[in-house]
Length: 280
Image 1: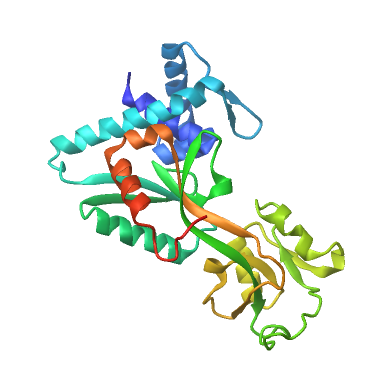
Image 2: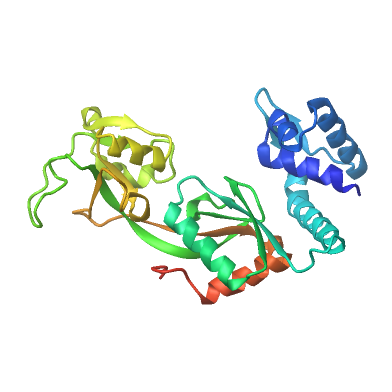
């Protein structure tokens, strides 16, 4: 089986879009379409269904995906071996958008300490052999290794009336919430926002965008402590109610543990959690 066909398949599967996949591979869309069609003919199975926007993956594509990742990784590792780079341990790591910079840096630092010969490639979003993500972002066929558990806190603009309230001072009703309706955490936080539309000052697509809105003085947001703490122009206050929490860690397909580098790091982080990484 041609590794180029598998690389084309992986790009389309991960991008869910022929145009984006072609750009990622630096080839034309017609060339990519022909490559995918050749792979489908070789396998005797339809892998993708074109939609008005993007493509839909078939059940056969979901079965092929982890195997294709493994085969491509092994082929690339073999190539590196004969290029005199057998001493390096490659790993491609995806990082989801709402993971705090401090957590990303702590993970990378410990990974490098655990494997000094580590050759890391870091991607944004759902790419790579494994990814740093919130537990809720794991796909159904992925496993999760928790590294951090943290509470949500109130992130307030520095000039907000409650930003410097004394301990024990009664809370005034918040009338300028910034919410993230499309985020996984929204349903859990709705009870804290209240039901009045007038209590909402704005919306954001991501927690990091909400943080920037807080820093700009637009309103108050419920954010994970790691994101909000120490950000310029933002004051952090604990909730006066039981606080929701989230777990951050590694998402990966079970088959990905066949990759020597990921397997070694997985074993290391099982025994050595990052600072303040106690999990329930």
